[in-house]
Structure formats: structure tokens, C-alpha cells
Image (cartoon, rainbow over all chains, first blue to last red; front, side):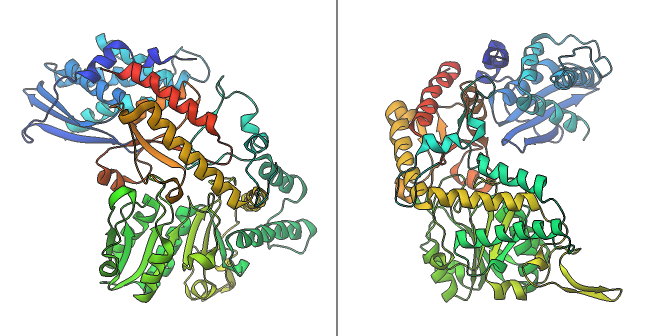
Length: 154
Length: 416
């Protein structure tokens, strides 16, 4: 049985306690989207300033559980200064980390039914891997990332 | 199973009727505190549904053959039981739907479209479940009707000081009989009296009421009532709209199809008599039979005994959680056990409800976290979500103790 320590890793709780890049950016020029988890009421508002194809600034607002807010905070720290292409790759990698595990939960088969995710250094984001053992929380963890994709596509 | 109307509820005997409590769930004892979400099911209900499929499965009202007749009889017997359970004078006033949400949509789409036009008002309240808000908003967008929301007053009760002003020009009041978030029991007879004087009909969303309190249509004096089967020991997939027969007879059909017609030609159709007029298509036969068994079960325990048990347990919950956690815990809703149902939305320190629910789950304590399909109420309370524990016939003081103890764990993990 998965323990709470797999879900609430110290680095995750640290981001929840002290969220990075908290606030809002003027929009426009910043791209902006608001994501909601209708199941539990989590909200993540993402603001991204893109200059010459690079995320030059990012801000996160909203409210919700530790996983949704920590994941968004970790995301903001990870994407700042990266090119939009790199951000897209990172987003794909994080979502792949969640979805591959989601599909293998029932059959304990970790061989991966999805195509290999991009070979991206996840760094601190690896800490979110524990979330996949708590399937109902995966939507919390991916909320910020889905909202980021939506913001970038505006 | 034991006890009657005058007896005390024997929780140990009740639990023995529910197979889900037989063994560990996810390797833990099950401390089930989400009966407002859905209740557990006693074996009497499961056996009635099994018996239908094993002994009498056929479509209803279809043929003269034995099995179809058996299926029809069992289903209609359940209708009679449900009518008796709520004190309805006539079983034809019981319309089976797939859930209470569909019952309220039926009301809005059938009665609402036939009776409401631009400028008419419908009075709701801010403590409603989305199922009693969104169908009216859909109709309002189409018809230009006005929706008025009775506000929340002090102590988790509705503020009815301006009820008469709200009712001025209203055609319908549609309101919860018990809040699924706060446990609030609005004074339905008082609201009905004022509404009827103002010329408005009254519908109640009784999802949280019918499973927990003795329900007599005559005492409530409402015109429409919606409730679901699965919160009262019945299966999912069946709900009820009750309405006075003359109202049902005057209402246009909701869904069209087989079973709801008297005759069909290429030119058009005529409708079957109520309640069949509102039951298009093959109904959830086994589920309706299961609901019939559920009301038999609840009657065998006695609704008065159930209510007494829940008031006592509510009192214990409110006292115990305060004694142990003091100001670290906020319980929303009325503080007087006799003025509320056993559903408790609460906040604990700054721990987000979703995290709280996760930590409690490690102890087998099953509580719901979220907005409970009542976002306008969440905005009113100034919170995004709450954790919610709710009680029923199989809960006792030990369940409350386990919840109260498990909160310490959340404190350890999230005390920053």
C-alpha cells in the first residue's frame, strides 16, 4: 500500500508552504489561462510572459490542495527562462510520467504502453512521481500543466 | 436487524446487514462517513435485485406471458411501497427517474416550460445543490424567467426575513429540505404557507431528507418532491419525482418514447396516464425493485428511531470534535443537533480538504472533500471546498472517534 510519504514528499510540501512565482502578470501582454478541477474545486491561474519564444516571466495564482498548488509552483520554477519548445517538451514529459503510471496501475506492468516520453531532465519534478500511486490526485498534479498549455495556446 | 418505531437503533445488528462492513476494505476497517454522497446497501436490497434477475427477469408492461407479468408486478409493488413510505395518497403520484437530478430536470422542463414565461420568478436558495440550480438556469436562459436566491442567515440557517418580498410575483419555490453541505433543515411548512399565500407552488429537493427523517407529504404540504434511491439504502440509477396527481396530469411529457404513449400514428401521439407518461423507455426495473426493498428495510428500523439515532450521534460528533480539537476545527452549519441533519462540512486548521480527506483515508476514514455540488454556497461561506463527514444508520460513536483521532495525523503532516 502506498504511504502518505510517497505523496507528500518534502520538496512538494516545501513548494506548497512557500509557493514560487506567486502573483499575477498584466494580461495582455502576458498569456493567461485559468484551470479548474471541477471535482474538488482546485483553481490554478497561469500567467506567462513570452518574449522572442522564451518564457521570460511566469506567475501563478489560485487556490487548492497541496498537490495542485505545489505542482504549479514547481512548474513555474521549472519553465522560467526556457524556450516555448522546451516548455512543451517538459509538459509532455510530466504528463507522460503521470499517464504511463496511471495505465500500469492495474497490471503492474511498467513497460509502458505509450510512446517513450521526451528525454527531458525532470529534476525536482521527479518528486511528483509519487502522485501516480494516488490516482484520484493525478488531476490535481496535472491541473497547472494543462492550464499552462492552454495559456500558451492563446 | 431489529427495533421498531419505539425502539433504539441497534447499530451492531444494522451493520451485520451490510456486507461491505464484513471485512477490511483496502486492508483497513471501513469507517464510512460519506452517506450523503451515497449510502451503503443492505443485503436485503441486493437480494431483492438478484431475485428479480434470477426469478422474474423480463421487460415490464410488455406481454401477457408469466415473466413479464411478474416483472411488472414487482416493479409496481415497489411503487406502492415508495408511496406509502412518504405518505403519498396514490402510487400513481410516484414517477421513477434515473436520479433526483433527472427528477428536477423533469420538473423544470415539463412543468416549467408549460407554466413559466418571461418575467415570472422562481425562488431558490444559496444553499442549493447544483441539481436544483442549473436546471432552472437553463430554463431562465431560454425563457427569460427571473431566479431569486434566498440568502444564508446566521447560524447556518436561511434568512427568511424578506421571504414575502422574494415571493412577490413568484410562481414556484424550489428549495432543499436538508442541505447536503450544512445539514440545515429549512422550515418547509412555514415556507409552503407563505408561498401558497403568494400563489406560488413549492418543490423540495428531499435527497438528504427522505433517507434520514420521517417524511409525510401531508405534513410538508409541498407540491413537488424529488429524491434519489441510492442515498436511502437503495441502488444507484433510480430516483423519484412525487407530485400531486392533478399537477402531473396537467404537465406535458418530458422524454418521449416507448412506455409513455397511449397511441402513436404518423400524425402524432397521445400520452399514457400518469405516472407512465413520464417514464419513457425501459425503466430501471431491478433498481426500482431494490428501492422498494430499501424502504421496507428503513421501515423495519423505523424512521423515528433513525432520526433519534442521528440526532444523538450529531450531538456526540459536535461535542467530541470540539473537545479534542477546539478552535482548530470549524464545523459549518447549525450548532443545535435537533435543528440539523448529520452532515458536517468542516475545516481543520489550514489543511486543504482534499489533503485532509487523503490523510483520513489512510485510517480507513472515508469523508468527501470538495464543493459538494454547491459552489454558490462555497462562495457564501468564503471557502473553495470543505471536507464533509456524514452519518447514517450504521455509524456509531466509534466512527466519530476514529475521525477525530485521525485529524491529529493531518496536523502532524501539515503544521508549517
